[in-house]
Length: 364
Image 1 (cartoon, one colour):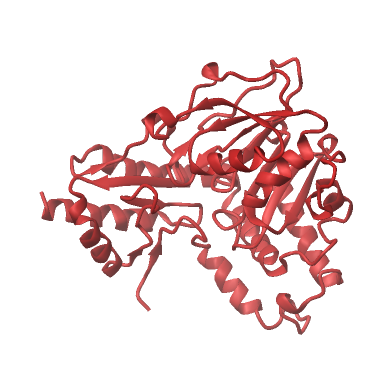
Image 2 (tube, rainbow, N blue to C red):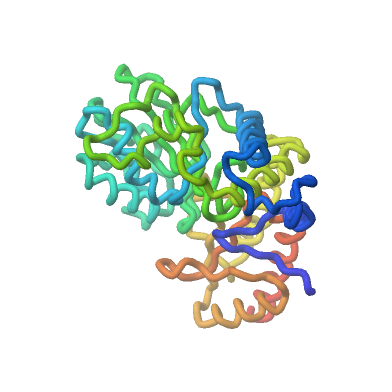
């Protein structure tokens, strides 16, 4: 089989070592005689997997004891509703930062449950930058402040954590970290709630990770479904119903892979190296263009356009013939997008850069 580098935004590439181990354990996990997919989620075998996965996640990120870790269904999109259902806690308003399509989807859903204040937005420049915090117009009566640290479609990343410590109202910071979690060290204590769909840096699709401060649980909107109550899941160790067991198992393997690499400080260096290789090419070429403000460029998702859009199809076909797949930009913005998550090796970026240089020279 020819070598393939998969630049999909999600479901995304997984570490080769993880896939090999999963293959070896597929029919018989650790001598149990069962595949993980066949195990009872309440059996000792699977409970050991779940416990180790949570323990490794806590260790890697540095999650304090007063935060609960939940493994849920529904993707990040379900969290767009679960967040206001659980965090309004008697208030009527919430602050949202609008930096792209995922922020907008969260805002649209939240409006079903509360009054949404758009405290800052980059829509004025087609979502190509992250608004500086000094420009934010926060509501002191808001139940929480929600933002998306990395916009997968637009390739805009907050390379800083908003500081709400000077607020006298103890407003929790909420983050949709679906496409940036585990890519760099993280101070969890700065947040009230973090959520992330797994299918980018954590594991396969089907699992959602929620990290929530304990004091924010226990008061949901009247009529909220039981399955949308964070405290209910925490009290049942995410096992009230059958969790996405195989996705959770693969996540455990990914976390072990990250630990073996040296943790988040090491993977951050890898990610910075990969991003620099690609952005350096874009910045030193008049054939390619990246629309995102340099200070706010994502290390995970790199959008770019060709000087002549008529060459897009040829670019994609030739890229695929070179083993470079899933480079087409999101249908809403067009162009190209290279998603270079943790599992993408440096060799993949070098191969992409080399191809892009050749293609540009050919059409110069």
